[in-house]
Amino acid sequence: MGFSPFFFEINKSMLNKRADKLELLRIAEAVALEKSIDKELIISSMETGIAKAAKSKFGQDNEIKVLINRENGDIEIFRKLIISENPENSNTEIKLLDAINLNELNKEKKIGDEVLQPLPSFDFGRIAAQTAKQVISVQIRDAERDRQFNEFKDKVGEILSGIVKRSEFGNVIVDLQKSEAIIRREELIPRENLKNGDRVKAYCYDVRRENKGPQIFLSRAHPQFMAKLFQQEVPEIYEGTILIKSVARDPGSRAKICVQSKDSSIDPVGACVGMRGSRVQTIVNELHGEKIDIINWTEDVGSLVVSALAPAEVMKVVLDQENRKSEVVIDENNLSKAIGRRGQNVRLASKLLDYEIDILTDKEESEKRQSEFKENSAKLIKSLEIDTTMAQLLVSEGFNNVRDINNSSLNDFLKIDGFDDETAKELQERAKEFLDEEEKEIASKVQELGIKEELANHKGLTLGMLLTLGEENIKTLKDFAELSTDEIIGGYDEIKGKREKFDGILEEFDIPRKDAEDLIMRARKKVFNF
Image 1: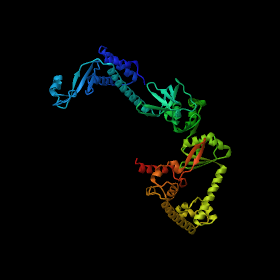
Image 2: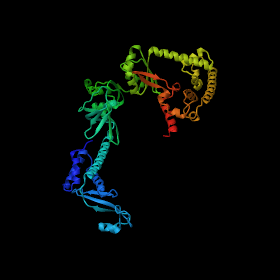
Image 3: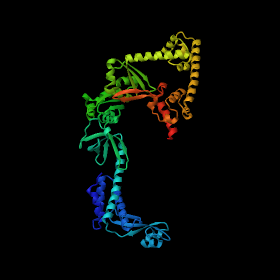
Image 4: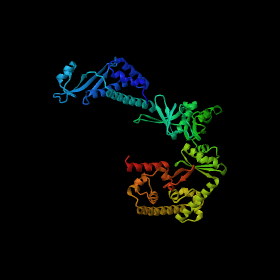
């Protein structure tokens, strides 16, 4: 943030008695114009600077006030004094009679009021001049920072254009005419090489007020950068006829964008692609060859999952909308397409829809269903002391565990061929008996594990959950508050380019993500008092 030669002429004009006084005002106007800040602020900073320098001449105990005439440039220097009955310090206090002698207008003043005593003009020495210059520099810089912050704070979420000024440790500094912005290394498109003098577009995602000036943060890797480019290139998006529902990017490689048309006569995908691909190609060029999949948004989540995984052909989609999870069945020939290179395709689809997508082959799905069927049947046989045929029949009808049987109505059982009232009631009695006994057993184990009362009483945690937490050595509310949502319900990690699933501590309880987040946040509020 440099200063023009005009600025450094201020010293000569304001400190040299022989200089043309109007020159001071001319210089103030020139600096104000160059820096895009108020001329009045420049003159005020000059007054402050001269006052600071005058203190070194007349003594630091004095409170100095300087007035520069806005019409002719005359400089008047005053000492502020307080009217006192018995002045003890002549540098700060004055008798009422002496104040009246200074100026007839002071007749109206009373004890405790402030008056101004004119001081003689003087030639500034080198040190005083330097002091004044520093004060003015600081104030002008502060004003410039305020101007920049106010100018750019409302531009968050917009695309800004500038010239590459320099590179610092992999970060790129961009000249936005009277301001500078930074594109951090991680916010650049991979393998992108921006040189000094290059014109560059980027998305403004943050503007902060900092001591060294407002920091304007730009990104070319942000998903919204691509969204804003589409807004610029596609008139229908700019006008609001086509809506961008979501965006997912792997910068420099591949991206997916989901669009919806508010006008049934307009094809949103075709509009985004443009005649012979002209619109999307402009964006691809700006993103250095990033491949873009454009998807037509629909209310049907299953159809969205199918479209998002293109070019792979999907056989079946199983949705868990409550937990925002999806199981997708693919034949062996389409598996590599669905997953993509290093898991890229499924990862982008998952980000685009905000769904966890688990891909299975038809063989894996069949084996999984058979395994679940056998496991659930075996549990019912053991828990309810029933034969294999009845257990398998119950599981095939959707009664996958003892709790399902306990919570169902008699009519639900009577819909099954061969079931009567007596059989249904007997099953429910056995289920209730089992659950009561299990609850007592769990309560005893929870107590043995030393689960603290504050955790045991945390709303939303069942005895089964407490037992599982205790077995993982999570025994206090603080232990629980320090967990992440993924640690509770499970999630995905990218290991060596592959998307690997990891289990959550309470995953077996099928807690919806929203409920898990609520459990953690309530715990953190109690523990950390926020």
